[in-house]
Image 1 (cartoon, rainbow, N blue to C red):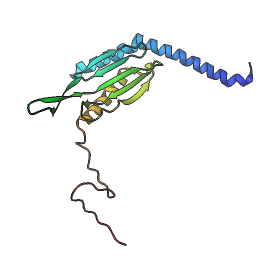
Image 2: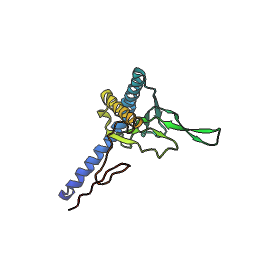
Image 3: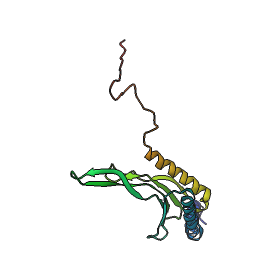
Image 4: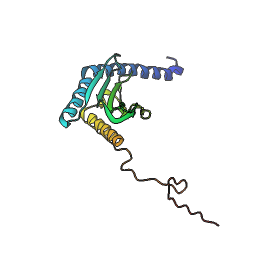
Length: 182
C-alpha cells in the first residue's frame, strides 16, 4: 500500500466503524432500550403519583422520540375579550424527551413549561447525548430528577433568588447614590 495513504486508510477504517456503531445503536434501541426507557418512566409516574404520560412518536423510523409529558392545563391566567368573556391561556407543563439521533445515539432534552400567549417558549434544554449502552434505570432516574428541578424552578420563578443590586447601575426607588469627590 502507498505509504502516503496510511492516514486516509485510518480515517476510512474509523468511518466504517462508526457506520457499524450506528447500526448497532439502532438495533439496541429496538431490541432493548426503548422498552427500558418507557417502562422506567411509567414506573416513576405510577410510583410517585406524578401525572405524566409516556408518548411514543415513531413517525420517522430510526429517529423516534419518547416524551415523558406532563400535559397541558389552564394556566389560571385569562385574557379579557370583553366585559363577560375571558379567553384562558393554556399552559404546557413541560416534558422530558429522549430523541433518537440519526446515528442511533440518544439526545436527552427538557422542555420547560410555558404559557401560550405569555412570552415566547424557551427552546428545549439539552441535558446530554448518550450511546445506548450508557443508559440504564439509574441514568433515567437522574434525568427525571433534573427535569423535576427545572420545572420546579420555573414554577417557583424568582421566589428564592436574592435581590441583585449593582453599585454601578442601581435600579428602583429610594436608592442612595453617593459620589465621592477627589
